[in-house]
Length: 114
Length: 114
Image (spheres, each protein chain N blue to C red):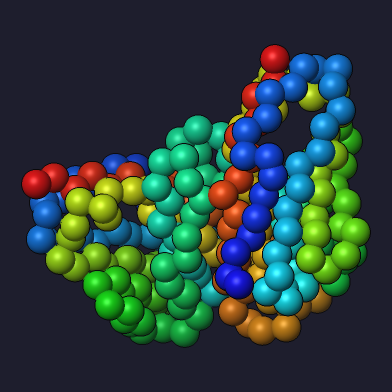
């Protein structure tokens, strides 16, 4: 299994809603990531988890709250988002113990904030 | 600072060869990756270079010169399905070791014409 699975694929939410994005991988990777990608732009790193601990937070606003319940799962909790937060949210995973940090990406969640 | 540059757009003809260049300036270097991304889809891994030289994988080759902060992706025998965005990404190093972080260039949109 070389897949990173993200749900839902599409999400429309209001600015007062609370929602969660989910990500799952079964490749035994010990690093998982959230990236945000706007149209015609490259992915921008948001968070890095290594061994289920948050190791990097790229100064992301607190309305985005990551959670790593176990080594296979990664969530992104959303609350009080703004329309400018509409984007493709990509989850990725990679091995941590090798120098080759090839990241495997999920298909993404297309988020629209209205 | 961190800076990765690649051309915004390129056009090539089916069956031809195209070279996509990438230059980078990052705080440390732990490898350079090339990803392919079709519109609306997740990035997929193409190649990884950490030492100087050429890595060949089928129709795709990637070259790295660390002293020049330069890489290129070479695509041979172009096919229509190669029309996509090609992302150059650098993994910067940290004093503490692996960060798992990837910094992406803006991406090169390649259009393959018949």
